[in-house]
Each structure stands twice: as C-alpha cells, then as structure tokens.
Length: 209
Image (cartoon, rainbow, N blue to C red; front, side, top):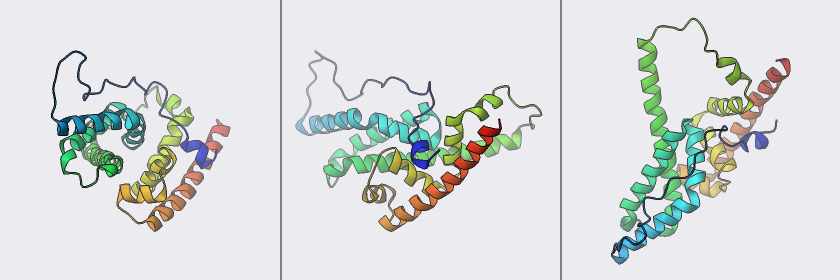
C-alpha cells in the first residue's frame, strides 16, 4: 500500500455521525435581533462551520482517535473564534486560526490522555488474557494504518495529516503549525518514508495471516 493510498482512508466505519445543528443559526421565526457586529461574527462562524466542520473533525479524530472528543475540540475552537472575532487582526486568516486552534487543542487532549493512562496503568493489575476483540482489531487494515500514523513523531504526524487530509500547501501547513516551509518539507519527507516502512511491515503481516 502506498503512503498516499493509506492516508486517503477515512475514519473507521461507524465513526461518522450526522453533523450537529449549528449553534449559531437563529431559530426560524424567533424574531431575534442582533447588532451589526454580532451578526457579522455569527454569519462568519456559521460559514466556517458549514465549510470546514467535517474536515476539521476528521483531522482532530486522526490525532485523538475519539470521534466525540474530536467534535468537542472543533466545537470549542469555533466558540473561541467567535468570542474573539472582533479582536482578530485579519478576518481573512480566520480559517488558518481555526486550524491552528484545532491542532493545539488536539495536542492538549493527547497530553491529558497520556497523563490519565499512566495513572491508570500504575493503579491497575496487568491483564493476563487478551480481549476477544483483539484479533479482529489486529486484522483490520484501517486500524493498522491509523496505528502506523500514531507511531510517527508528533510533528511528522501533524504535517502528514494536514497535507493529505486537508490538502494544505506547505505555506498553509507552516502557518498552522508555526514552523518554516523548510521544516514542513523535512517532516513530510521523513514522515512519508517512515510510514512507508511501517505499512510494508503491515502488508507483510497481513499476507502471513
């Protein structure tokens, strides 16, 4: 399997849910009135929600591997952007700010999860028998590809996710992650090479099963 083919995979079946109703849409016939500034912010966030919700949830899901948490992260990022809309220096960069916010919150969620997992591991008794679901999970190609992505260093994983799932340019990735275009190229090259090696191992294992 090529790196491009592997990264074209969407989240596992059953992880996609219907998009929730936008919290910025006023109920029909409500008679609600808004100031010009408030209307401008609401309309802008509504447009961002409609245009980018699915992609951003998908990217966050690839980072945190939890659909519900990914949706919360994107929702919180939209709310934060709405709250500071009037303070943005350039509204044309709102999408870049939103992507950066989602990536930062996804990183924070991962850090929090790792702390919790380490605590639970110290408190729990080792399990002697594997779950009955383990063989099914191991045999699932989609899970293996996502696991392979998880094994990459954080920055390589972020660059590949933004490049292949959001199809961002090097300049857009650099702006989202706060790194240089040269660093984006380096992380993309190293990450792709490492991922190809892992995927070759996965394919070899599948052929033996």
